[in-house]
Amino acid sequence: MSRENKPRWTSGRVKDGIEEIHIRKWNFFIDYIQEAFSPGCGWIHRGHRKDYYKLESTIDRKIFDKAQTEQLRREQLDRFKMAIRGKRGANPPQYDEPLEWWALGQHFGLLTPLLDWTHSPYTAAFFAFANAGKDDTRKRIIVSLNKHEVERCPELAATVRFYTPNSDENARVLGQNGLFSYSDSGEELESVVAQAFAGSRTAIIKKVYLPNAERIDVLRGLEQMNINHLTLFPDLSGASSYANMQFELYSSRPSASEPASPAARDSVEEQAED
Image (cartoon, rainbow, N blue to C red):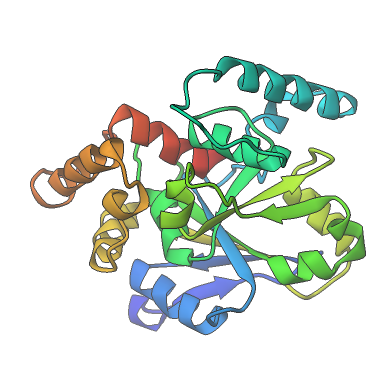
């Protein structure tokens, strides 16, 4: 088969609610998104820089004895609350909801039980491709989750929650059209979904793979959509990262070096890994 006749993407058989889609080029990714997801369809998305990253939060990744999950999370949140006293300015908001405290900590790099998601598959693509390194895998991945089906599933609704912060202290979440998922059990989300939807041929999770070699085309395409550090990170670190990425995309030769400032790079990495 000639290259011109190759399919734009290939999809494997859905197994236990999980589907894998391999897309050859960035412009075909746009075609796929338009075909697979209609506005308001209930799907949410996140990007991973490496194709083997799991749907596991930063703190749960470090808890090896899951029987201690609740205790270790509680101790972590108490430490954070103590550590930030006097550091939030005058008359800071107080939260009754623990998830609001977790969301605040997530914003500043705290190990939390939250997973970042966005309602925009293109924003997820940005987080998958924003940074580069010598350890990149051959493909990057955008993971999509059918939030509505998870909420309808009795086995999952009791343990997996979705949360959008109300606080103005989370301006980045607003800019990224974002939300969080939270699992009481601390188990990796793909495994939990596969168990709940065992035998199902209906996709609940779609794992969309794109070649790492498409990175510059992806970022330039997203720039045309006004998806960049400047719009997703409305602060000084986002502004410096935006300038650095503009230099990489349009002024320098292709490089494996990471374009972001340390603060924004770490934030992108956390959202691409956690």
